[in-house]
Image (tube, rainbow, N blue to C red; front, top):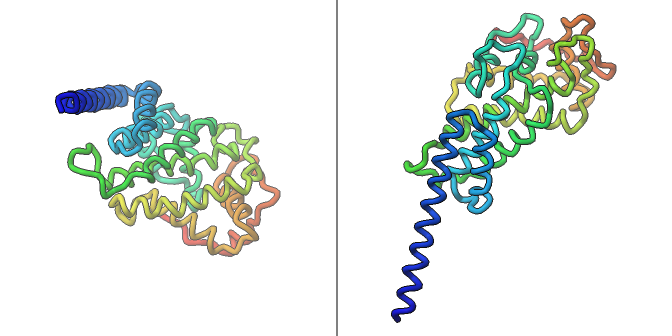
Length: 269
């Protein structure tokens, strides 16, 4: 009986020590996030989440680190202080060009230089989607609305990569080519447009929020303009957004006539 009691005490001590070490690592990661040291924060948090996927705090912070890392670099078309998640959001939300009827070119402002970092953003989205909202408590530093808001911002970044793929964000106007968008990328773009609308609504954003109105306008156009297929539709609206380039964004497979015939009412946003 004494041996059993001692064993229980030892196991309890080990559990408390392990929990304490985990909490300490989470607080260190939180400090690193505040400093913008995303790589170090990811290293700490990834191990915790791998060992305990049910740790919601570590999961949310790891997702924040993935998204923050992708938003950390300065974008050429944004203001000097438009860095970080809120900075990119501010850059995106500024008024669109009159030539950009659906607002797609606003995504080019915040598009990453390469597609590599987008894989981490996708990882962040997947982690957030796995969070059981029923298990979020007052002990957590975030709410259900925070989860949906972060997913929406992450989707804004993944949506922007359509400009990276077509090289519309390079600053070299002669390189833009919408035909570089393949079927998988077109499907991802359309799906993100669809899903981000629900994410924003769940996060409590108003119906006139510009990310929501632009996503809705683009999605509805792809649904209703009568393009031959999904990929052709995405290529067409992307090429149209950068039609003011000299030379215009090239696209041999586009169906501009169908877009012009549909002629959706341009948003003021």
